[in-house]
Length: 283
Image (cartoon, rainbow, N blue to C red; front, side):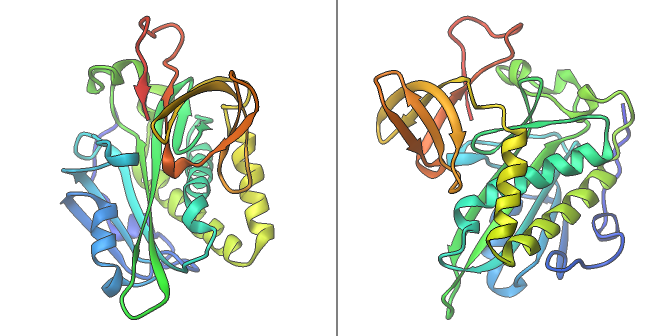
C-alpha cells in the first residue's frame, strides 16, 4: 500500500498560483467539511481560494449524505469562486469539476474513469469519487459564492469500505497497478479545475467543450434509471444529459422528461457480479 504523507500548499500548486485558482490556499489537518469551511469564509477569502483537508469529520455528498474517508486516504479539495447570480456555474459546476477530476486521474494514473449523472466519478461501475457544488449569498454585492468540492478515493484498500460501500465503492489503490501519488493527483486536479474555470468564464465555447468532454465519459445513456422527484418515483431509460445538466429520460409511462440534479435523487446500479437482489445505493 502507498504510504500516506500530509500534503502542503507547494504540493497543490507546485508552480505557484494559477490563473484563477490558488490565490489563497488553506491546508487543514482536519475540518468538518472543506465546502462548509469555504462557504463560511467566502467573504474573507475571496475568488480562487482553495481548501484542502487530510480528514473531514462531517464530509458530505449530495442532499446531506455523508462522505466518509479514512485520514490521509483521499483527495479532499474545495475551490471557491465568486460569480454573478445567473452564471451557468451554479447549475453546471459539478459537470465541470467531474471532467476536471477525470482528466486529472487519467493523466496521473493508469486508470480511466467515467462519470455517472449527476456527480459520481466511477470505475467499473463502482464509485471512485464525487463532486458537490454549493452556493451562498455574499454580503454587499450582487455576486454569489460558489464552492465546488471534489473527493477522490486514493489509498483505500477493499477492507476500508464497509456495508453497502463494500459492493459499490472503489479507490485508485484498488484499481491501479502502479503506486498512487496523492500529491500528483491533487496538483493535476487543481490545474484542470483552473483550466476549465477560465475557459468557461470566456463564454459559451468553453461550456460546449465541457459538455462534450462530460458526455464522452458519461455511462448513463441507454441504462435503466429509477429517480425520485417531487415526491414521485419515475422509471425509464436514460437518453442524454442536456446542456443545462438535466438528465433526459424516456419514461416507462410514456414521454421524455428532463430531471434537474438539484431536485432529483436516484438509485444507482451496483456492479452486476456483486449486487445482492433488491439492494441499491442512493447517490
